[in-house]
Image 1 (cartoon, rainbow, N blue to C red):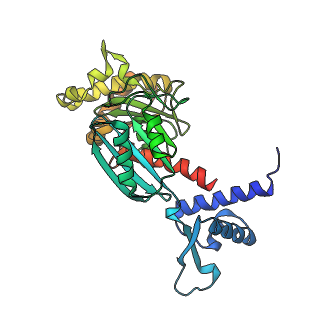
Image 2: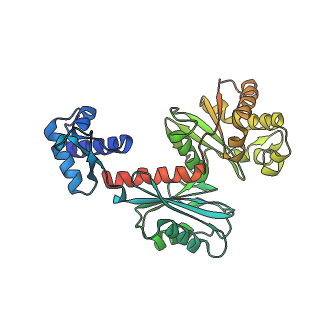
Image 3: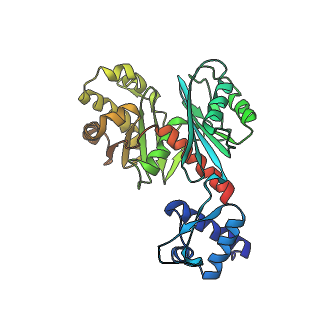
Length: 338
């Protein structure tokens, strides 16, 4: 094992301080020393570097009776970069722009009509409000090949054509990442929702589209071609699962029957993956709440060999958008903070 060079040590220390400022907000130099275990000169040097780089600034002072350098509060510069998360669905495009700290700076929604690549660009630019963007992450239904970042096969989003992402990237002039929308919703569940603190789970997505996302070891697992979690095609009782729990069908089912059907679809992934946790997401999972989760857990316990907890989604608002913004922030912070 090689010893880190002084330059590498500086990069590691800088990122450690930046992550602490992201997590905890403004901190004094003594607080940074306590949290990092670094020496006084090392913390002083890294704060100077980060301020010179436009990443950190003095935001105020700590305590009313304290004065001097040790009382200064250092915080991130929020406008150092902005990112966009986009939810591209069958009827509309919604974009949210956030600064590097994750604070929402703008949003916009447009109904899908006309040329899709131009519409996506306009929605993102409207949300940005003239702000330059570092990274854009777009969530859309369908299989996204992890190797190419492109959609596999035909999309049911109106106006989607081969090469769409390439045209969007060309229009925006910034990195644009395409991801399956359920995978992004799983990121939101992992970071802020029902799966927080759980490294292994399956998100069952029950909305206008039916699918699942697989998270193992704290990472979204996409499969070789992006098809991991595509439970809609599973045959259950002689019928595709997506037909058994389509929005029209679900609307006419009582809660017990709905839970039984969801459990049959979940049982396959649970038997193979043994995730220990299934989260019911999408509109139906969220609205069904704890009661639907309890019923699904009862029926799943009789179908799958592995003990599995079932929880309703607790992500407020649009989970796909939140996951897109979180993913874009991760990419931008790695790019800017090192």
